[in-house]
Structure formats: C-alpha cells, structure tokens
Length: 278
Image (cartoon, one colour):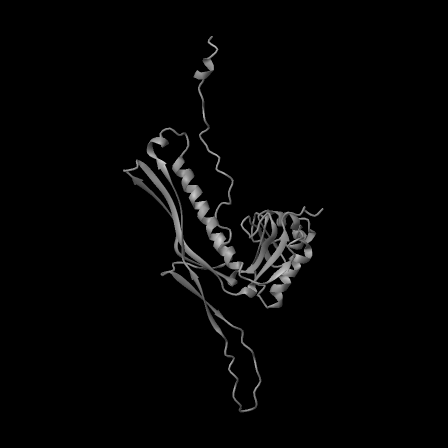
C-alpha cells in the first residue's frame, strides 16, 4: 500500500460543538426592582425619605414630616449581540450554527444586564473589609450589620454576590457552609449556586468589580435599592439577507439600571489573589 495513503483517510467531526465557557445569562435581573415596558429614553424611580414623629401641645399644630421626594433616573442603553451565518457554510457544517450563535447572543445580553446592574451598585459608598485580605467571617457579618444599622428591611429580599474565590473562602466558614445554620426551607433547590444565611441569599458571580484581582468588590444589597428598567426585552431576530447569501442572527434589548438608595448596598472588599483560608 502506498505510504501516502493517509491523505485519503476520512475525517469525521462530532455533530455537537463546545461553546466557550461563559456565564449563561443574567443572574441579577430578578434580584433588583424591575420595571418592564418602559416607553421613552429614561425610566424614573421614586424614592421617599424617612418621616420623623414629633410631639405637640394640646390644641397645638402637628409638625409636618416633610418627607423628601427624590426622582432617580436610569437611561436606556441599547445592546446588541449578533453574527452572520453564511448559507453555503451551513452546508459544510455538521453543527447547527444558527442555534449556536443564537444561544451565544442570548447569554451575552444576559451578562450585559448584570454588568449594568453591578455598575449601578458601584455608586454606593458603603464598604466593609479591606482590599488586601481574603474574605473573613467578620466581613460577612459586618456587611449585614451595615444594612441593619440603617434599617434596611430584613424581609427576605436581601441578596449577596460573591466572586468565585470569595465564595470558596466563605465555604470555609462553618455557619455559611453548614445547613444547620440556615434551616430546612431553602428557597432554592440548588444550594451550590445560592445559599441563604443571615437573611441574605448569597450567590456566586463572575461579574463583580475587580473579580480575580486585588480590591474585589463583592456585594450585599436589598432588591429595592437598585432599579432596572426594560424598554425592549431581550429579543431574537434571524433575518435572511439575499445580497449576502447569509442569515444574520441577532439579539438585542434596551434597558438601564440606577442606584435608588445607596444605604441599601454594601461593598465587601477582598483580595481575590489571596489563598483560600485553610
């Protein structure tokens, strides 16, 4: 047999395809105040200040509380995620390229929503912990304490987002890791993704500021402290373009996030480059 026969060997490719590892969509949209169907280029969230009770003399006048009213505006940002799929290229593939592009676009827009929400929360000036140490039990407790100190309701609507390294460090804390401290009625089945402790639903998130670096900004917040308005929800559009002999697989949305009340957000500073505590 010819020594060059190897050039005639058949090659078979798997029909499935591995997509690059990526965070699959938005984790935070359901953890903030959400306003759908926004009409216009902005959405306004209303904030009312605290009232103060006073005394009065008999037959005297009641002192008005004069609660402050603040309008917080979020501007709509248009986001797109699309790609071309050539018709004749599809005939040369064993994978469903349009489906792959469609999934990738949906995931990308979900991450964009989270990025807007996290950027808005970054406007809070409340911090606990240091940028030069790994997460400690005191940092977690201190973040919750800051919410308590300003009367943020402990009503089941408190959330926390930890970087993967901070999450790993938290799992070395017995109270955080053990079900003995969180009760039997967890709101989520997948306790590897979300754990409830100290009245906060904690989740892993790869999109917090400075993830994997010094000065990671892990977050704790009340869902009413952040607003996200959606003008156009995530929409898929697959259009045939004859002049290109291709489909354009597109996803898009229009939405904006705003910090409604900075008191309801605490940034837990850690150093993601530090080793996981033993």
